[in-house]
Image 1: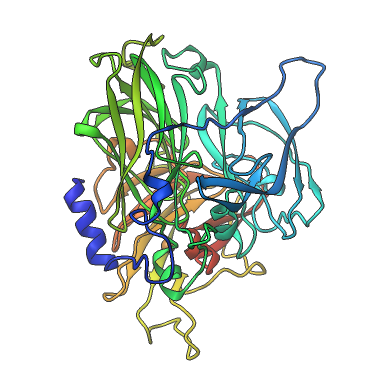
Image 2 (image 1 turned 90 degrees about the horizontal axis):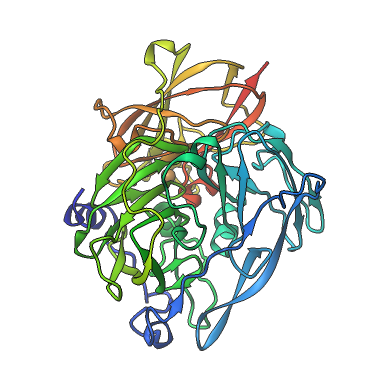
Length: 490
Ligand SMILES: [Cu+2]
């Protein structure tokens, strides 16, 4: 999709978010934000992993804590973070490894930690049922049971997910395995294998996060007008000349992003949400909705030391950001060629499905079905809002299911949605009747649905019984009830 179409699509759907109107600061007037763009080095979240000493059985420790963070040189912002003032460490594990964690809640609200994309027993999924009370410690203990991938973790407490993520709670969760070990890919974390957590925020004049939810914010998502890369505004990073790998996470609450490089320089997508694609896919742009990830390779071999380029991001609300600057150094990267084969990925076959279910992601016009007399809003799945005491879907362990998911928008309220399933990685069978794009043909746990899109996905529910969530990953939609529960029964 070209930039023009992406923006035009949003302008039609959204009008334009009215920044400035409610006392939010604007990038144009926030002198501090603009005085020295690209002067701060990209923050690389520290790694959190096992020590490698076989006798060391200490758990990986996360502390959910309050902090203050300097986004602007003239004021601090109250934040939340894991083990720091913002975001969290990058947890790195290996397939088949037993992982023990210890999550301490040091804030004065309940929270949870959900391992987005991870296939784990329901009791360790970290959804709304696994509440960690203030002052309490939660001790997940599970064995990694899936291939190399870039996943992430974030809070998932009922009705609080959007606010907690917005205030800073998110981190990457990387799985490596024997295949990712052997592929000729950059793997020097923070040097040529670079995590990029992209989020947008808006701020009040006093530099506090403007997380308020008007009806407009709930319907369109809380959309910011400042873009953060790993928690910083307009950072720069040095790249050795050759192949660099970026692990991209759209960590925003509700924004859809279109990523591209200056001069539309080409790059390769090598992994989607749940692991590698079979082969790299050459592109000039990449669209990710909130919660989706991709790994990409950028080849700077034809550039010269000292050359600079920008990573650009179009936001669905109509903004375009120069997200960060990349500076080519005089060092030579370890990898100089884009690998030609990645990992053979088998896709689930439609004929293997035990059953098909239908899900309508609904946005209803005022007065429509589901719209109460008291002005209750219109976001629902199959006409229902989330109820923790209701199981929406039950399937036997070992089932293969096709989920036909439709974004059924009212004419006057065309909103995008997404569908995220806990527990599984799925395949997209088709999007509006067409075989998916190559970058969507691999393992996925979140899929974007433009207004009136119909996507059929197929998943196998293996290994674990229990209750898991499915929901729109626009967090304001999720918190407003655009979520349901499926139970895998043994
Ligand atoms: Cu939604």
